[in-house]
Image (tube, rainbow, N blue to C red; front, side):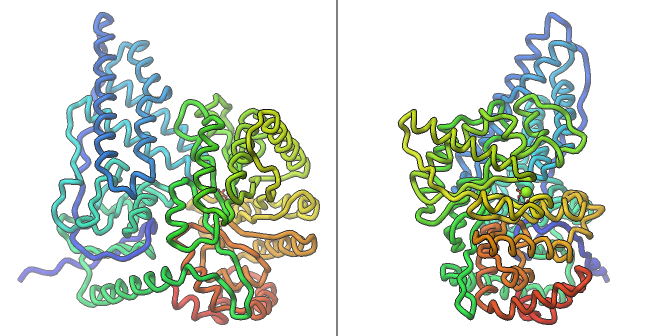
Length: 584
Ligand code: PEP
Ligand code: MG
């Protein structure tokens, strides 16, 4: 009698919500890990460079073919266009040719060296998004390498049965080939929350769990697996009981999503009639489609730094203007909050020859960088003011940590408006000005900053990091990164109190706003608007409709008496357990 394989539970990072149950398809990614090193005769160096250029060209042709064949949803993500640009980037392409020439070495080895240097530069960056761009460099160099050594890539498009992909990592070129009739979901060993694999899975709206480390070694071809993209769990060889349980959970989840998405176009009004705006955070202009589908009341945070990445020179005013204008026009008359460049020192280095920094998170980043580079900043400010002529735009300044910074920023904004006036271009200077409150000094100075702003937007992702001295990317201390920490609650309260006192609006755009169990607290503290990833909007709107402000305010008084995050969480469960029960 053969024994049934035992059920195994793997825990990873929930990259895209939903549940799928099916057979595992292991994506074979071998072939380019071991690379030979040999010297090239001087007389043959030009031929070696030609061989390298031919491999880059072939890799580019392959990616372009994939772009042409990709479903529309993925074309919007523009990831593969970034890869085409990266193929010819100075730091990759130029540098590899330079090494072949200067060291007289073979193309494979030169490429390997360049990629290893770039990986360490990117992995040292403070910004999680930039850190994860290492995977772009790896995918691009893998495709060049495959063409150099003559290994063919497996085509996911050729898979002709309904399966769940299991891979060490999936490149955007891989995920772009996903046929929704065949691929139910995917799981990977590598990748984090901000990885493209997750972004693509969300765009396709299929479940995905990433960062599992051991999925490709523990899961066998054709094993039955359950992917729970809500909790980040993968169950291998589920028992009959687990299978039944997850089949029910899958149906419940899908019914629930259908209901809340249908209702998400209604406004989020509390039972005592207070309307809370539920807005979206976006990184790419193309995401406005999801914002509309999920009933976003506008865009509360448009992170603009992504347009500056993976390229040799920064975008010019016209390019920026066109992207902003697109978003503003599609969303009009709903507001679009454009946050100015939140770039860090390391990021500047990749494009603009900056300096190495020991603590990039505390370095020449964000508004500090912009004030140091007024030409870069004014170019962006002009583009924003021009886009403001086409709808409702608010401007938001990140990482303000001192009063003088907002004064200098204001001067540059005026300068941008004056120059547009001189140039005779249409623009709108009469826009709301917001300050991100994400550094503890900004909380302390909130009363001064309020005189310079029409609204505050609390960025809890950074505020928690700086207030509790916890690196938001460090897994060793991730358990201490607690939005419900009494220190965080008091800081938020200080900001909302000042805002009410000064008569300005107060919003939240950090991840804290996207969790259903934080909502009673946030409403009670007096937040006027919450902004989050588009997919969370329906659920947060639903939760708001079940609450009333008076109860929420009373709840805050109780929560303020608690001494630990656990204590506050216990109180949430006690008072609003039903919200948690309904949550997926
Ligand atoms: C924040 O810090 O909370 C925020 C919204 O900005 P980002 O995550 O882009 O730093
Ligand atoms: Mg921030």
